[in-house]
Image (tube, rainbow, N blue to C red; front, side, top):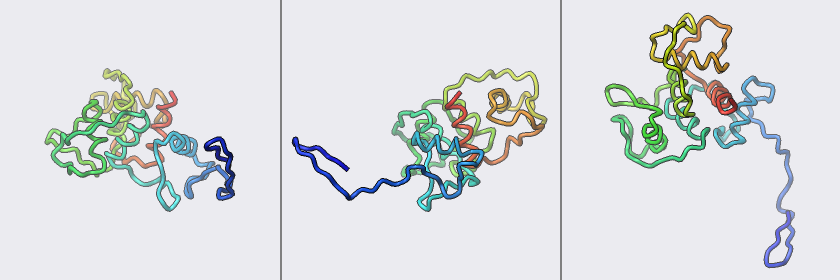
Length: 196
């Protein structure tokens, strides 16, 4: 390690060069989501846990999904009070949620709650993802994209678009829109949209 200061050069042997090929303990580079996960880590969008794991199969809650997406688009994060009844003032995610609300990415439930700790469902996640990435979605769905998605379902436009751009599998009959999203799936979807 070399440092120049005040016209003088200083050397240090305190530092050691180590292998910079970082890998989570549970995400081998051969995993189907590895490119997405390591690509997002490189862009400081997501991180792992202190034990060196990423926890691919762990479910993502609604506010975690918002944080990942806002980090993915490098959004300015605004400070403000919660627009929802069920959010504590000192919540770690308050400013992320406030930002998402102000930008029109989320609007909560008709009862004024957001349910921050609930697992994010595929249908909810796709809406947050496309709204957060400012993607214009055609609201008119004339053909069922999957057997378990009707053309008049509120989430049909998001599912249809996700199928069109290859975020979800085009070769299956059902996609289970109410299924919980995992960290691996969320990372994969965000990375795909960022690289469209």
